[in-house]
Image (cartoon, rainbow, N blue to C red; front, side, top):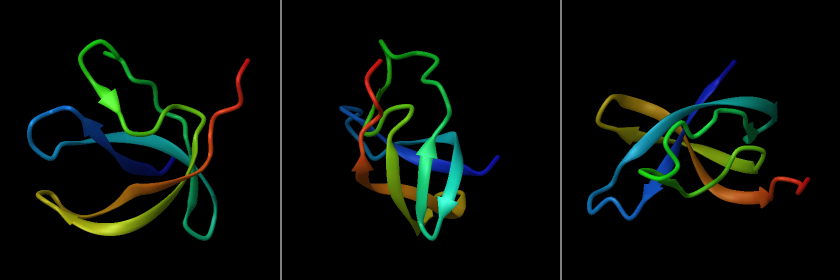
Length: 76
């Protein structure tokens, strides 16, 4: 399963969390990874969200990062 990076909000510095995602085609992905510590980490996008990704240079090298919400997770 592909891995993308999701931005962490309210961290004081730029932080990114690697998460599993399902590739839908082109640059579209569905976030499949689970936030194991939602009380400590606030993700910019949530599990089930469809996001557009682009390549960015992070400290670990070039990575796919979620940059735009295309469709929110369906509510149950």
